[in-house]
Image (cartoon, rainbow over all chains, first blue to last red; front, side, top):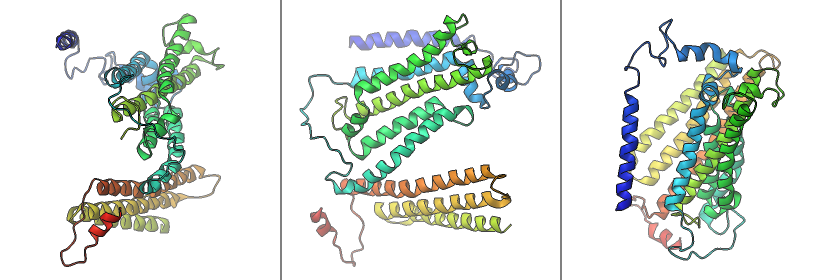
Length: 263
Length: 123
């Protein structure tokens, strides 16, 4: 009861701050606002991105350069939000110690098709398909500079490949490949990689996440290629966190936080 | 020209099977026949349409050294079709299996021989 009161107060405070922030927005449909392109002479962010982003970063995909470079703060804290969502799932669902019912641990099964006849088809397909999915996920992460993709999308695909293993056999089979310790580590390391790129820029005397100065560290000719390569590094960090949290949410939800058999 | 015609024939054949799948999904009486129609229609028609696309990519093909990017596109399309060939029937099978384990009974015409109960005991 008391926790609900506190929750209501927290929600009310956050909501009023957000509503207060709305009053500073430009008017709806204002052609002179920075977000809207089109009127020459107005301070247009979009026009700048469209015209200059390739010269600045040498990344053909405008979305990636805006997401991982110009709005690096936003993306970094988006990753933190995903991490926080995973931690909230842990805090709410994860049962440690006193378990509801003692689940008898079955002997470790090594085959997808062990015993259950109806799972031969699904298990075999998953065994064939999962490596392809994981390879494609890495491709999506690495190819975000040139085509739709990037850390979030690739991470979701990579996380889905572990969920598919859990669906085809059981949760233990997936946890043997990505254990609880390891996925929490993976999530933290992902954010750490992202923040490292920001801090390295600070150490070299520029603003947080200003990748241009990293050129000597990344052995590139100029700041443009340094920004391009740093974006790839940042995307890898995002992919780590998203993969781990996707699988963590599935594992906890499907087994009511017990991380036993599941489904 | 001839390549375009062949690809259009493939794509149209795929669309015919798509229509078959859609009609079956609406008209068939129970879960199993509907899943069967949707699964079979989807698999074959997607394959035909994608094969049609990949054949169409050859329409201005000149030489291997000049058009290797076209070949790359064809390779990717064939990869997609191989993926569909494996995954689509599997997902249909998994859906049917889940329905059977959940206890969904197929509809059987009263005049036809009904072995459903024998099968149920066997499982």
